[in-house]
Length: 145
Image (cartoon, rainbow, N blue to C red; front, side, top):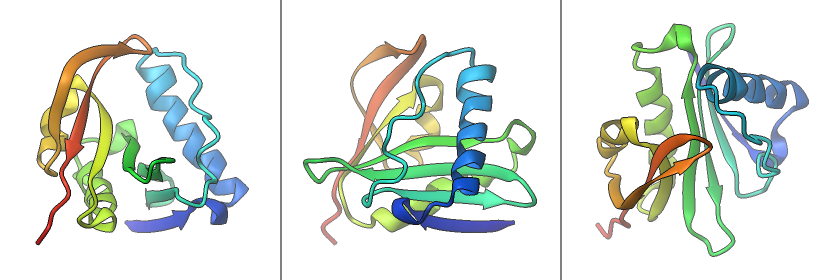
């Protein structure tokens, strides 16, 4: 398995197409949640993509820098055939490691709260529905040593 990290402006057209395909396969088709995944943030300078590949894209996550400087993790996804292999944890661990001590936020599908809690994320506020799927905001506090 190969883990690659790519900064937004360095993303090739082939990589972008591969990423968008996996995200659409899982979030739009499998979860039956039609939404506009192409949000214009994949190529931003403050975006980093984490890809785990073995001939195909098996797991993926992205981090963003919000306009206010806050860091955000999103689009964490594992291909259907690779679930249960630990690759989701591996890609998430890479993203969290890169974030270091920075405070960060994510919007978790509520069934995945336990997964994100293992990385120090704590639920905040009430559950809400986004694109027909229950979500909850989760934050990881800044670590000060």
